[in-house]
Length: 506
Ligand SMILES: [Zn+2]
Ligand SMILES: [Zn+2]
Image (cartoon, rainbow, N blue to C red; front, top):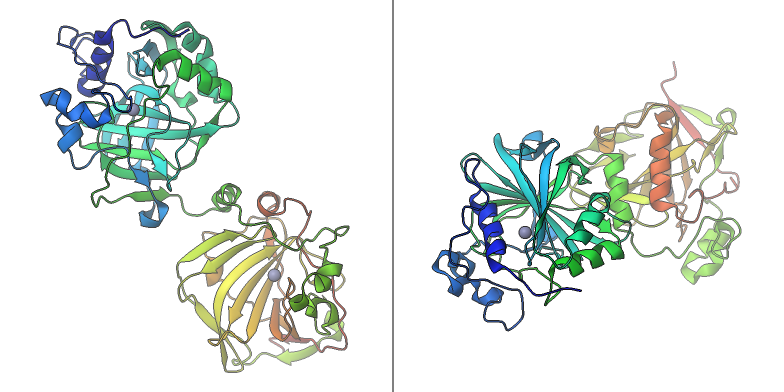
């Protein structure tokens, strides 16, 4: 059972402590001050819309122009690759106390629990507490819980790191606190927890939003540096229930409503896109389920693609389909001349998409082009097949990369394929777009292999087999191939097509 708040002074003391903590200041310094409580109830005279009128020290809650929380929208955020200086954590275990302050339950570290560093300034970890529901929104979505880790610099500037949670697997940090939280249910008091390691709080990713805001409780002091982690964590229903029961006697929530952005900048920091980050992103953002399949024993399997849709009938009736089996001995050897394949790529912004049956990188801007016999084809996207679709001299490979190009009028398509075997990792930091085909490549007229199996695609397959690590292939597999073990179309008949092998013959 939850009983009503016995001692409003204690909560106020807690708030003051958060805001004006100073190493020499005793925790209870503000006890003597006259308390005017606040609450989260809709329509209450002490509710969030009135906080700024309750006390003159709380004026910022009403007049502040850069208040928190806000809605963090990816579209409007400036994307930046993070450097170590942007947010560096160096926490350490220290003794802590858990407090139930009526409006919120929190943990205060008494000793030196380490710090975060932002642009060379140390902000020391003072305490953490939970809000239900989340105060910040990510792309318009609210979550079940939000954890605030409150830090303060030697000059008393505040930096808060926030994590959002949804229902799922239990949160290990809260699991460790379960008994303590339970013992605080309905009682405003504190418990000494002993040594608590702040590193038990998972920092799941290096992607976070940064903006300048305020404290989300009175006195709503501004100048707070916010770092809101982008990856949403999970906690169990039981854990959420426990937090609800322990503190929120009236409203079961303690989240301040959204505040106006007022033209503020939001930056989304992220690591350089490693394959791991790509896959994590794609797991969180799957696109619609594909309407064809690679599983052999399936109504949407490759042998049925031509029957699934009228516009896909080429998959069945086409005579120059891909992929094919290439035999070097049957290929016409041609000495490469400059006009056969000229590669002229350049860096451009790209989007990564999970198309369920493959991961694609789509270039938004001008990523350059290739020229084949004077015709210019612009690089549009690349994607991976596992295992390879093409065979060379009777062999399959572990991975095949397709770089898809189109003419200006979109009428003609040219694909360059690269084959990979398991060994060293692909270095994605060295942009795929910068890769040039080796002078040896095969050339054939065929068509792209997923439906609609369009014909007339110019194919170049690089002869040199590169390497990829098992971990990388596994990651790609996990992200996209939810049902099928592979996303490679079976070999199609050659039907008398001529294959040329370009090379540096002397
Ligand atoms: Zn908070
Ligand atoms: Zn492909």
